[in-house]
Image (cartoon, rainbow over all chains, first blue to last red):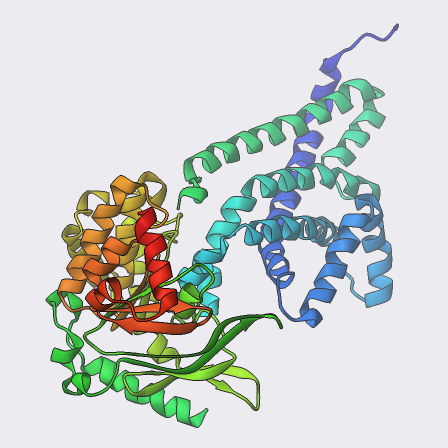
Length: 224
Length: 289
């Protein structure tokens, strides 16, 4: 290989890359905020006794789990405005696409968490006179959330990485900015290596931080 | 529905008129002048089946007085735990009625094929389960105060005061800030009993509460239940521990195949069981123990 690595070129595009990283983080944060809440609602609906409630949420989950995320992003950008006559800013559309995908995966994590709540916890809730809503919010949700947390973290990090797909629809996140800098400097190897390292650092830091929180807040449920 | 609503109001009035409760060691007979004349629980023709084939309760009849400590014994699958779960409102029924303090509590509506339940009455019944069922994400104190605060709207400070005094009484004051996973089985079960008592129930149900415990931890839980019994707390208990059954019961019921086969005082049941099934069961159990 005759190519000599020279990372000094990065400094000229560093501002753009930081900006791209900030956009990536904002999209990832918004998508996770939506995905964590909406995922729980969808997850609860999958446990509904009513088939009418279960059917649409199952279809929603299957659609987002069984089609490529890139196809979903492109479809949202080009088809949603035409079919539903909804026109959002590309940024909002990007958040929506990523968060709906994340919602479907989080719903499955919650479903597993909800199903792991022992039957006798529900019985105890009834015996103590809690209403169905109180049982859900005071007993099922905290338990299901703790059980689902490792998967929610993994899904959240995946969603952060999936924001790179938004570069194909011209959202100026980290990958898009990387492509710009690479085109300007003709140094794709250095630029995309830097981009990769940035994704890696953010993912590792977030995963580690949440693992620490998880360790502090987790309890031995089988012994309860 | 209207009838159920009327009952709810009546019971709410009665409950409201009732003084502070069991911490003061008063029995329903002392609190309710009618206590001696009408049963606390009156079960008529209670039926429950799981699926089309498994009938667990078969038109079961049973009365319990206000000063009764009723122990239900019998072979596994005889319907003992199901009876308690039905009384707690955890299971629907397929026939019969249950009255509580003379008021309709549970009934089966033939027309709609649904169970009708007075939720206000259900709130006057407490239950302790075999597997502790403490909320793992809450410490002991919060386990005790959650229901009084959220269900009865009691201020948290007042609920914590009551909880602390109850924990003290049960020898658990040092564990107030511990999480369930940090407790022994016996401690968990005592916390579970204290949690149920926080709602000041008029009737306690104990479903094999010592079955999951190591033998050396059984005594601490039994001591707590005996203390409640000595204060006249009405209770229905399912247990396989015949020694404890004899010690705590004012009346025993032998239940098998979904019906009450025989009932009587502990002495009658142990010394002179009338029914062959009861005799066989007691022979087997006492021989094993």
